Image (cartoon, rainbow, N blue to C red; front, side, top):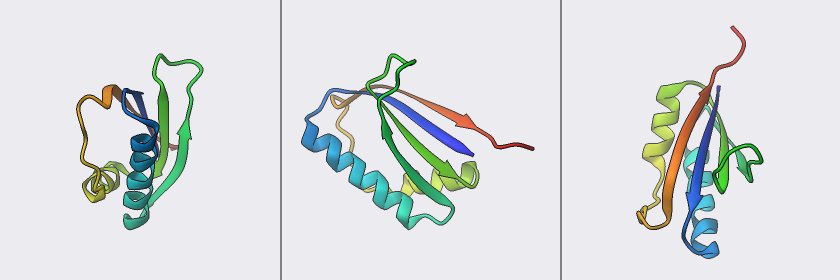
Length: 88
């Protein structure tokens, strides 16, 4: 399944790069998770979308727990998660 994390970013470019690295490391630590990158969505109002492939929802949750990122509420001002399952 794929997880899309759409977000508006209000921090610095250095902190955004640090967020990228923290999420990549969390994905590497978690079996069944593949980081697919950060993209600029053309059809959403958000600044950025992170695309991650995961085995299932518990695996997604495990990856979020493996992240060492300390969020500043001023940086991620709005966000939305989308979950897409594969063919059945």
